[in-house]
Amino acid sequence: MIDKIKALEKHSRLLNPGQAQRNAWDSAVWDYANTFIRHLNTTQSFFPSSKKEINSTHWNIGEAGISMEEILKTVVQNIDEVGLNPASAGHMGYIPGGGLYPAALGDYIAAVSNRYAGIFYTAPGAVRLENMLVRWMCRLMGYPETAIGNLTSGGSIANLVAIVTARESYPITAKDIPTAVVYISEQTHHSIQKAIRIAGLSEVQIRYVPLDEGLRISVPDLEKTIKEDIKHGLTPFFVVASLGTTNTGAIDPIAPIGKLAKKYGLWFHVDAAYGGFFKLVAAMAEKFQGVEMADSITLDPHKTLFLPFGSGTILIKEPKKLLKAHHYLADYMQDTLSANEEISPADISPELTKHFRGMRLWLPLKLFGLKPFRSALEEKLLLTQYFYGKVREWDSFEVGPEPELSVAMFRYLPRATDPNAFNKALIEDIKEDGRIFLSSTTIAGVFWIRVAIVIFRTHLAEVDLLLDIIQEKIRLRTL
Ligand SMILES: *Cc1c(COP(=O)(O)O)cnc(C)c1O
Picture 1 (cartoon, rainbow, N blue to C red):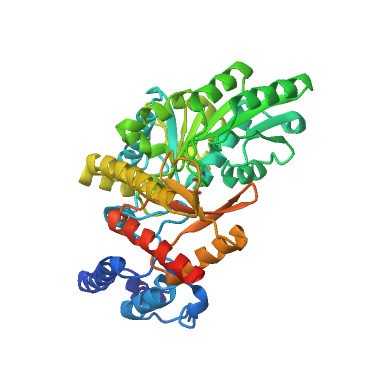
Picture 2: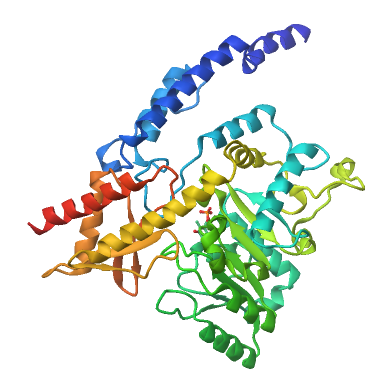
């Protein structure tokens, strides 16, 4: 047996390479990263997949390993150079990501040390750091010091945690589901409906509250709907205000919706996945009035704090409600209980073993300080107004509502052809060109092209390039 163990050990030791091997890998990966970042200004924002076959023949997992160089080659050719490039300055579709470089280093540190960040007992430093980040976000939103929250993998999971917490604390049990009512709008992010279904609440009544001309929830209509529902014996349960809709960046009237929620006893959720961190811009304070009334708030550092994907946050005003929905004590976890420990992520989220994702958030915030974040966010707001102002002046163009955040909508009005068909073709031209990536939306049957300026690498030059590209593509189409 000893011989067998020793023979196995010889091979299993390969999993723990020495410094020379680690350095060689590090330097190959660093070369890859530097080349990737250096080329971001000249590379495409979008690689149409029709133009390229993904060659995945080397991807199958075999008994023997291959070299780092071979691995990186397939990453570049078959992963990086197909589809959307969400790190590039020209990515102005959807709500873009970005991916601050020091956040990658934070991930590296977290993965190398592999702290067990789910439980205070096992990683008191890591858990305290994450709780500190949550408290920082709570303060930013005007929440009391007693509020808590959890760093999630994204906004969808944050919305799911919110709805599950609301369900457990209300509580909505099986018999209550068919008479419980959820109030959203046509512009609410679809992750809310998905969360309702995952939370076992598919049979609730969903009301789509009418919108005003700025595509914000109409508060009088919301109150009217709630009153009618009460009259019919239903239970108004949950209302969502979007602090920045993904589609158009419209901000629902936060304080008035909060007041109605209080008056009629609804759980008030603010989905600030896109807009939340614009609070860092002093001039935006007014738009956030009333956000502190929310029972729960979703934030998404992988959007407006420019982190790589995999960083969301849920904030909950009353800790006991989050605990009630998520706390569970297994017998084999009894060592982890102690009298004075801080709250552990495992007690307030669906996760147990988790990535120490606080590190990727904390590292860039500490390295840069807040000032460049505030400047970048204000710059994006102004770039959006600049773009909107230019297009509004152009002949034969129509623009959407005045941008409240960093999304603007426009469409070209051709003289003879159907505008929807023309703008669909126009956005295909822009995608095919690939330098700038835009997305589109349809509102009340009208096809709009959306420009969302969120990437930290996007500056005036890219917005001017976009304006040129739009003019150029229109010229080619209307020749
Ligand atoms: C992006 C977004 C979500 C979903 O967040 P993910 O991080 O993509 O899961 C939810 N709500 C709003 C308003 C969003 O913009």
